[in-house]
Amino acid sequence: MAERRDGAAPVVRFGLAIAGFAAVVLLCCAAPGAAAGIPALGPDGDVAVPPFGVGERLVFDVNYGFINAGTAAMGINELVYERGRLCYHIVSVAESNSFFSVFFTVKDVVESYLDVRELVTLRFEKHIREGDFRSHDVVYFDHDRHVAFYPEKRGRLIPLPLDSQDILSSLYYVRMMDLEVGKSVYIENHADRKNYPLEIRVLGRERIKVPAGEFDCIKVEPILRAAGLFKNEGRLTIWMTDDEHKIPVLMKSKVVIGSISASLTHVDYAEDSGARIP
Image (cartoon, rainbow, N blue to C red):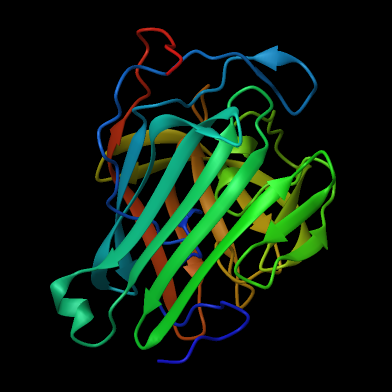
């Protein structure tokens, strides 16, 4: 079962998640303790409480054209320490259902460790199974030395732009940003041993109906040439709630053949009983 060096996905995946923003899916172990309400340094340099936290879980139906292909989920299931720094452990999982798996099996797990105070990613892992394709990768983000370290790639070091995010943490980081229709926001992104400036175009406002309900949304389009979350074969469009949470409720992506959509079916909001440090 060959592993492609570029890590690019065949048919089914946003990269998330969903993730996150790829097809992201069923995950979330229950977290010990509460974790909402931790102030963090936001993109504008001000300290604010993020609209996400431990206990948040988003579940999606994933459709390939008119065919239900599986489910996806993404969420923050616990606080953990990574190299001495407290982090949100973000997990996204994308999984094909039994019918679709007869033709093409998907089981993608993507994990990100996001510093709760500075909102920078410290570690990223992906475990990809798509048909006969397998891929596993781990990268450590060293923001002090501005390098990404790949222990499973002979310890390779890649120069890293300031405050770089991974493909999963980028979705959470953009939720801290002010989104204004007609303008773009930008995030430095690192994926697959390359740096990709990520532009997020804010296209407009729409009211969207999905299985989880009806929502007033901001429509955005991430522009990123990277394998994984945002496909470079076509456009990805995301509808996020037009409120303080900015939760993705609908994602549509063109792929090599056809299109994929992920519609929100269930949401658990972050626990709000106050943060407790493990």
